Image 1 (cartoon, rainbow, N blue to C red):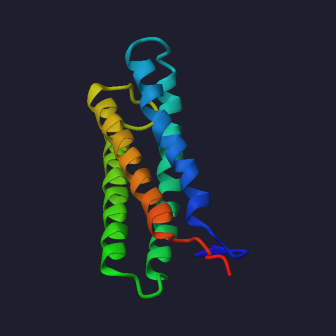
Image 2 (image 1 turned 180 degrees about the horizontal axis):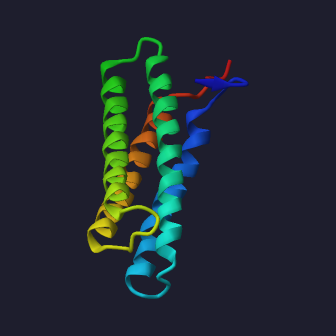
Amino acid sequence: MRLFGHPVHPLVVAFPIALLALTPLWDGAALLGIAPELALVGYWTELAGLVGGGIALVTGLADFLGLKEPSSELTTAALRHAAFAFATLGVFVLAFVLRGGPAGEARPVVLGLEVLGAVGLTATGWLGGHLVFGYGVGVNKLR
């Protein structure tokens, strides 16, 4: 998926990565009693990150389907990146459901899932970077 000749996926992934990576920090501070009101910030940060993550998944899928005759090695790398992205978003969805809404308090199980999700974000981003820098996905070759 391109906008003005540039891939959209790299543009939209920055927001959910940042938002979802911040979520365990807010909930950790709330859980430790440093600032209990940050649980509400964590709720809205996680919700916005999940919405952005859904958009990132759609644009990434469009990029994958638009690959011109990808090698089996590239296809495997892209599917691995997609699997990590789906699993990571799934972990954050589960954490979001278990929080109990905006009035819910920070809970250890939710924080644990969010930390696991943050690790998943790191792996997903590394795999996405490998697609760009290792295989040149989304990069126009010089003429």
